[in-house]
Length: 68
Image 1 (cartoon, helix red, strand yellow):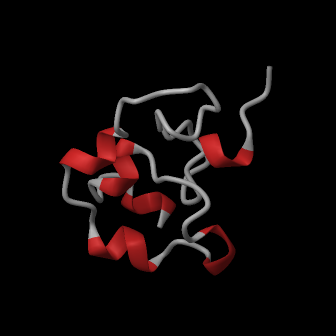
Image 2 (spheres, rainbow, N blue to C red):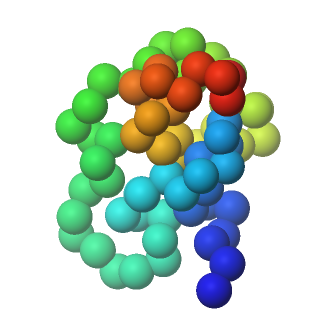
């Protein structure tokens, strides 16, 4: 089964590991609720993807800078 666009990081295209975007009923908050997201990474999210798809942990931390 192919991941949906909401399950992919809008910066690098890898799985974003978002517990809310995977389509399953969950009461578990996404991993991103407990971390600080890189402002540089947020600035590079395509406008059409804002509030539509989560970043992956690497991009959120600013580690995957080659994807930005």
